[in-house]
Image (cartoon, rainbow, N blue to C red; front, side, top):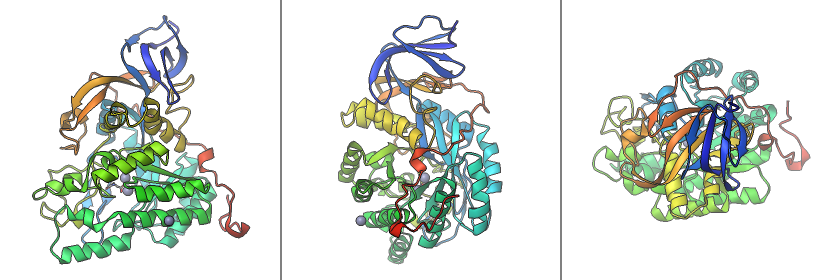
Length: 491
Ligand code: URP
Ligand code: ZN
Ligand code: ZN
Ligand code: ZN
């Protein structure tokens, strides 16, 4: 046979249009697209189904050991454990039609990054998903920036992640500038968590002093203005250095408008949002006792009206990637959401919610099935655009000859009520429990191998591949400098 596998009779959605054709796969890659392909060693019938590029989730936290992890401002820094391993994350991703991720190598203050990278390479190699890394910089010493960053770039890690808030992670403007300069010098994208640390810290202290400690006050501690301000500041500093950035998890129109303005002015600034900002609200955290912690993430979910505005910024193209920001904190046990106890003030509850498996079904249902976006737009948001911005295209994110044969076979009519067992992750809950969706993946193919069928995941641990990234267009500086003075010359 000419092909190892033929996917027959599906509607193939490429991100640029949809056509009925067969896909011939050889050696893990797409080798032919044609009306009819007959000579396959195996055939998968996709009649009545959509065939999508496997999802690319460019923002998820997997097996990320965090010292005082994603907690607010001040307070004790308990050690949180991200419960998702690369194995369980792979199973969850495949269950939801995602085949590659970009996840995070942590940096703990006082430490270098190289030992963490080595540790993380070993962890990731045990999974089944294909993966690349963002390197978190929480302690930008000269040693880290000048000696270590070039070494991870040489390995093909081409994005640095910075936080402008969180007690153990936030950088000052001066530190952020140093990271931007380093990224420009060595050829990396910088991804940014944009919220104002000092403003959140002040509001949190006032709320706690007033006895307002319940999970719902998490939203009160970080209103839209703190996100908009930090987004504006991050963009301004990136403009000053002439360094491309991506703003992570945009929750509101005001922050998206900062990005739109920057884009209009020609800056290389991109914005991502996540399903939680399209489906959850701050009111979800207003539940008795500890229950609201299940919906706690940063930035905070907003209102139904704000969800509509975020959709509009997706439609306009300002927000062009939807990732999960998957975070593995269970509600039960002692290491997850309850690490500081079930009556801890909101400040000490880890931020972040799981969503690796739910991302594609939620965006398809709320977006395509409900008529908010086209099928092609859905494919660009969930696969093509993240692959391109992260330097993984055209190997990932497209259905084209030569690309990896990563596919999600999708039943656009299947109705499913989301429930935690369907997520197949290591976490004991999903914030989307009970949400009804129309459209569901019925098979997932990773590099030509059927790794999920009808919800059953079968893949050999240790088969996930690292995706090294070469220099690419998106991360090249524009060459537009204030006063024409290059204060951050490239290596
Ligand atoms: O609340 C969130 N988003 N937790 C995950 C870490 C981050 O900020 O991306
Ligand atoms: Zn973040
Ligand atoms: Zn502004
Ligand atoms: Zn995140």
